[in-house]
Length: 99
Image 1 (spheres, helix red, strand yellow):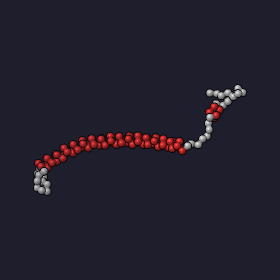
Image 2: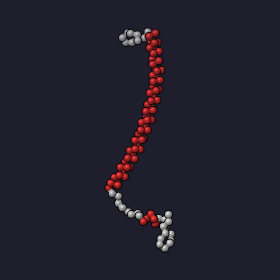
Image 3: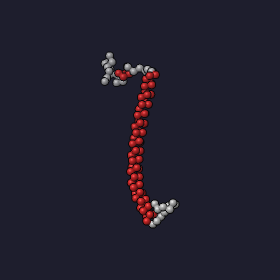
Image 4: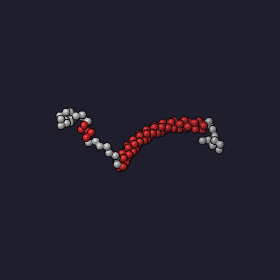
């Protein structure tokens, strides 16, 4: 948008914007609102990051638990085999009893 002076000459395009600009100091409540807005944005970002990390940690824990259950099943099978072989070959514990 161009503003024409009374003489008909074209003025700079910034003339329109510079007319209403005044340098004013910010009030205390305006500064407070900007600070609170920045803190709110920071807290929201941190909350989203922590939530994402918690979900990833839960997934890793689930995978670990699934692997442990599978391994425990194998270990229990191995343990049963060992117990059975100990009974067959007469291994006795300290009390003199076979398993």
